[in-house]
Image 1 (cartoon, rainbow, N blue to C red):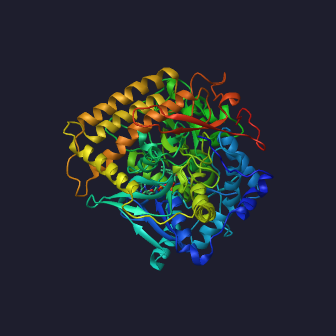
Image 2 (image 1 turned 180 degrees about the vertical axis):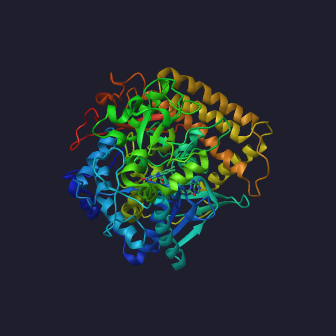
Image 3 (image 1 turned 45 degrees about the horizontal axis):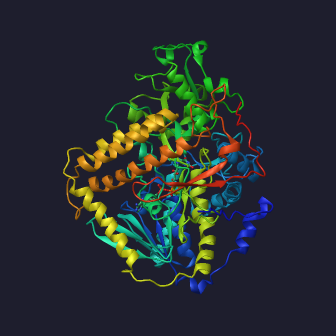
Length: 637
Ligand SMILES: Cc1cc2nc3c(=O)[nH]c(=O)nc-3n(C[C@H](O)[C@H](O)[C@H](O)COP(=O)(O)OP(=O)(O)OC[C@H]3O[C@@H](n4cnc5c(N)ncnc54)[C@H](O)[C@@H]3O)c2cc1C
């Protein structure tokens, strides 16, 4: 397979405008003749469905929650980036572009990243117009704070609830279209397969989570905005329902999967407390604006933090990276925390923790200001740990949080299956090997509000999809496939729960394909995962029936897909014999322990193609070229 990115050539500042002009249009009166399916109602899907409805298309939008308002995007805390330069501190579209390419360790497509930085400014205007209550300064202007990997303040925020406020904005826009009849919402529907006819994506198969009914939905194009697969690790900061099923089943229908091993481990999460924990909680990166990270200088020092004098503390990020200090990018901060804990300087009962200390800022700015900035996060921390961060430092440790990998898309956000578009965290597009904080919300909204409305019209106008019936052979076959998987999951009469398998799988992936990877570990995981998967299918017990609300059954289908995806992640990680961003192969590091890239051999997007059950996937490479931001050893010193 040849991957054509359709990234425009010529001056990068003009390429999106020129590309938009070259795209074919559909006249307003004709738009209503087209049916578009949007799977997902988070920031990417919600924004896309609302925008396409507003344009006049017939949109069918699906989500597995009871309301689009409950998509995982609502959990986003810290903020959203945009190159507005409101602080007059030297920001620009070019600087956001530069920071993002560098932050991603030179493994992203330049043209996409430039466009993202360009449309970031429109996103803020759009959201303000919707009434999103961004934080404001005393003078009434929108306030900004800093996130990792940047030396400017470009992050717009609404306390620690930015995702919630942005999603309410998108949700209101979506509800407006639902009321006008241009969007039909299908909550509590699980997409279980993609319908591909004559090489084009023509619909989906869903299962109603209320009564198990399997249905066919036909359309002229399908958009997947189904979020990330960070829950493959079992313990993660993602909502429990986040899953890979929609993109995984599309992969099995021919969409290539890009960079599956590029996952993000977030440095500031509440540490794991015990074996039976099922969820981890993020403490937003924004806290690193005012919180200082430290560990005791002495390994094994078990004194309470307040008893450790200043001279016996190591503010290791400030020491190792004086230019960026506590605001180094996530991959670097996570690895540094792991290194401190591995060396015995970790804090808390398990030794897997470092301090995030607000004391200096409270003294400088006052408790009230800190509460205004992070009040809800501090309250959340106190409720979970029983410790009060206004009085004692928070304990934090890295945890699985986000995935840069996802379905491969071209510049138009179209996958390798014509008519199948992929938006938001579900695609691989803009963050390379490491996403900068506050850039996921920016990308999801850029994709949904400002890119897909242009590019999908071009596809429809060019491909002119023919009318097809609900019982076309491809649709029937997809229904049979979806029903067979459900039946197989219910028919097992084993002894183990879905969660017990998921927990064991997650541990294998975390230990061998998590914050650090090496050849021996990845090979071990590649033998352990298939063995555990075999046991899963022999020894799984799903209680209840298909025709009822059955969350064990839902979960079982998702875990079955995680098993297959985990194997692809390890294969990809094994194949990429270099370190870059979040992909840290222990064999490839600088003498200071930083990621050591191999640009001569690995400056490409790894896109994997399904070859059939039991057969190894095929690798296709999309070479990456850098005309503007020249690859160099990333330095935040
Ligand atoms: C705790 C936390 C805090 C974060 N904070 C920030 C932040 O401050 N700034 C930032 O930029 N990023 C942040 N992120 C990342 C960001 O929130 C996500 O990357 C982003 O919200 C993903 O949006 P999305 O629209 O792609 O997917 P989601 O919001 O995950 O939406 C997925 C949608 O797809 C639907 N869906 C999924 N599978 C199926 C299926 N099989 N069938 C039907 N429907 C399906 C779901 O119902 C849902 O509607 C944070 C992430 C976490 C975990």
